[in-house]
Amino acid sequence: MEEEIEQLLAIVKFKRVKKKQYLLLEGDISRYAIFVASGCLRSYCVDENGFQYIQQFAPEGWWIGDMYSLVTGNPGHLYIDVVFDAEIFMLPKVELHRLYKEIPKLNVYFRVLAENALVYYQSRSMENLRLAAKERYEKFCSRYPTLIDCLPQKQVAAYIGVTPEFLSKMLNQ
Amino acid sequence: MEEEIEQLLAIVKFKRVKKKQYLLLEGDISRYAIFVASGCLRSYCVDENGFQYIQQFAPEGWWIGDMYSLVTGNPGHLYIDVVFDAEIFMLPKVELHRLYKEIPKLNVYFRVLAENALVYYQSRSMENLRLAAKERYEKFCSRYPTLIDCLPQKQVAAYIGVTPEFLSKMLNQ
DNA sequence: CGCGACGTTGATTTGCCTCAACGATTGTGG
DNA sequence: CCACAATCGTTGAGGCAAATCAACGTCGCG
Image (cartoon, rainbow over all chains, first blue to last red; front, side, top):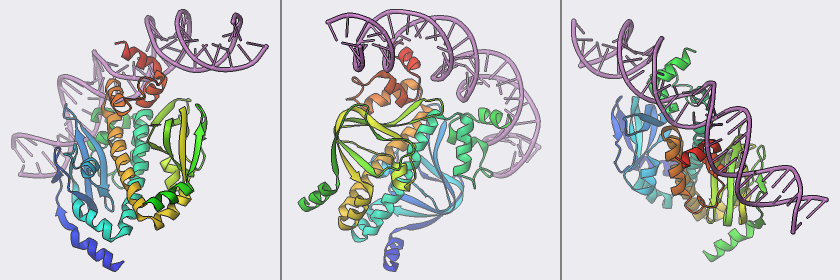
């Protein structure tokens, strides 16, 4: 157990990053899964009109990454940047795959992680069709209770998929 | 390898099922992951107005299940039923978890399966916000090229999240 | 201080829904 | 084998949630 943690620590890179700093750009091939020890990151994509759609926030204790690019090895469609100054661990994909063979438990850990994320995105993809903006806002609040007060409204709007104008009107009845 | 396949075959249940037959109801605790050898299944939920939202079709060679219920052990929110007469293998969750310990490879297989599904549902959840109905229809066609011709329009509508009336109008310009 | 990001408010437009009516197809029981 | 019901696709009129566009005030920051 202790030995395994040492092996892990040997391959991750620790980093302090500042607000607005980019960790991944659209078109990049992603080589790291990122664990957030403090602060907050986000991943999002941008459509042809420049609109942002936020896929995920990653406050303290969460993982974040461009799963598409990590899994396929193709250039990704996401940006990842820093919402609040953060301390992160970057886990290189190639080293992780080497470790999978040495530490079987790691396979279990990331299988469970992927399964839980899958459960969430399956339900989100249906909620995004069937729920009205008000209800998506409430879901957002219960998913990110620590963020709702310190995040600019604009970013909440970009997560639930409405314009900032509409969110503003909605919140003032 | 051969021995491992025997172990797997020892715990799965083979079944032939007929169109419209239910394999899971809302509120059920799901005990099986299902592999479709032939035919087609689907999973969907129903909102308070009786509207169906289809989460997934599973034609030949696909897995289907209620991940939420399988992962958490709680009663699920999905129905699973048969779209076209099918032959399926039902893999019991508890037996699978036993096998995980005996066959490490199985962990890898389902980790990769979950990762690929995750990639899809992450992108679908954002597409459901940012794409118009027409574009969601096109995505549907490329995901299920074998189904698009033999599926009632109503079910396509329930997958892309529009009313059957609107889909009909849309397809006739 | 001045500039850029953000939130607000109003007028107008639009994508999609609702409800209703109707024909065609399927399937089912007598 | 027919009759009738159920399911499906189509079309039209009207309505609503959310987008668009524009203008304006506020604040934090270089």
